[in-house]
Length: 268
Image 1 (spheres, one colour):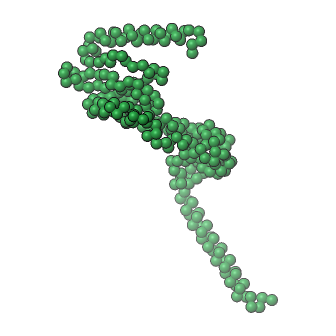
Image 2 (cartoon, one colour):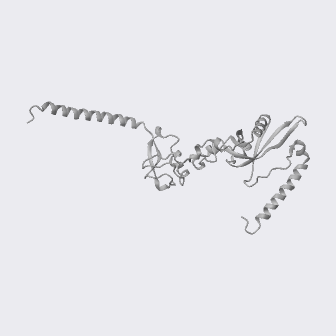
């Protein structure tokens, strides 16, 4: 029955045997490689999710993944609450990793030049720590810029309000289109801000930054008024106290008006 087919049968058996040896060898190598892996938790979609859906807790699951394959772009379980409720910019399939880039709007990648108004200029200036209002300035805020310089005529320091009602375009790399909920606290901090100015104002700002120390003051969003007469703070005005007393009276009057308005029926 098997006459003439013996060589084929032997070849077949040898082939199966060789395949088993090869599979065992590959399996041993894979196990050896996996032995050196450190697994870390990541977050994946536990179902298909369509684009534009707000991510919810029940849509995700935790999964173990080799640490060497987990990049900073991957959302980790302790960070998950930062993206819960955020709209997905891409569709997800079951098992897909949850990435930070899934929640960044198209506006995040918009060129800053598109936000610069015609005949205006964007300029970046160093304002870190207390000089930048302690990190509380955000894009689209309005600020004033103060400068302290050495007055060569009077041979003393003088502080003046250089510019008023300046619009902030960006704080560090954070623009008005950045998804703040997807950023860590360190990514929200800044050492410089980018503001909108006339070309001539930018010239003044650059010279001022070279000549002295600059500070920001933060405005109320509804306060767009300018100082009619720009004052000067000098060592003389500090010591005499005249200007301080006059300004205190003016400040007290403003606070009094605020309190009166707050006490009116229907005031928020």
